[in-house]
Length: 380
Image (cartoon, rainbow, N blue to C red; front, top):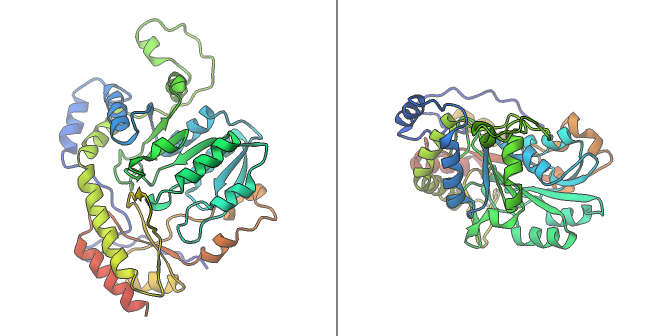
């Protein structure tokens, strides 16, 4: 049973589920933007793409957009997905992963969840591949990387595109390399509650340098903006484009946040480790994490337990906000035609048993310790 919990009222004693991270020098950064003629897409967007590519994107081509959903939609278009193409997707994710495929008219084939990591099940993916499969889309749940090597092997063997929804995994690495090294397309999100934010925003990182110009065109109505601004545009639009650009206002906030990223990551990691150390001792709780050759991004800390609703209700009484954050997509009417007579046994097993604990830079380490003590006191 799904419970309806309203937003918790903030006070000095409450710990909210999420809280945006705003960089210390945001006012001076915004002031600089407003002193120029560029408040829309301008030179700061270009600068952000360059810096992001070096820091997070393995020096691959990057295109900044208005949201992570924009980035996914453009990635699907650039990957050549068309109406009727089969695309394997996770059944457990934010709907933003899968809704853009409805824009295109693709045939979604949902893969079950791995019950221990909540990532896409590799075995489920293998069973869904047919001659009509155009791409595999996957999400690193909470910032925990999927088995990127195995997904790569499958995609290469079957000659299909691999699209990584890394909205939750900024800063994650795999075998000491950027996670962008392991997929044809990787998208990131800068929505309000992500590790860093521009209010809303997104980034596409891709391997094929030949599609960079097209990506920039369809981000802006199909217009070659550089040519137009240079007075050499031939005044014709030859492909359908969208209004998916990022603004210099958003880019300025992200550039300041990137300067603070090490500190942000370390704080979130410390909270994650406190939870993990304390709650892993409780035999009635499964901590969603695993050991491997990767670095977690620490966006979410999730536990699985039988008394999820009981714990959530009591924690709220102590001023601690928790929730499930994402839900199985096959429960939504918009996806019903793709799930008729389909069963997802792993998702069925855990759908009422996972709970996300607070983790953000407005929390203190003592908050995390208090929450851990409360949980172990409640779940005995």
